[in-house]
Length: 117
Image 1 (cartoon, one colour):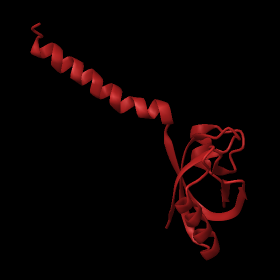
Image 2 (cartoon, helix red, strand yellow):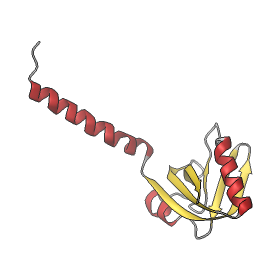
Image 3 (cartoon, rainbow, N blue to C red):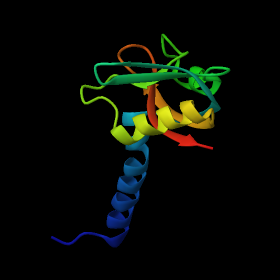
Image 4 (tube, rainbow, N blue to C red):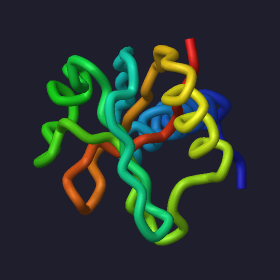
């Protein structure tokens, strides 16, 4: 079967757009908030943090039920590297950049990355 080159280019163009948009729809937009960690919650592999001045960017974007916390309540919990970064930043009183995306089932901002700055 012969396909027109213009049709193929148009299909590829649409697939490229879909591939670029789909991750945003599945995972939601990410936000960044900066501050000192003021409180750490940890139980049964679940960990969450609070930072000074809260998560204003995440609150505006995600609208979670308990927006003062950012954490992870997934069945597998949080990676040991992320936990170590949280505990290091808290113990050294260092500012962190917290990256969140959407909400956890507990209503927290879903923590996807954290950087010591």
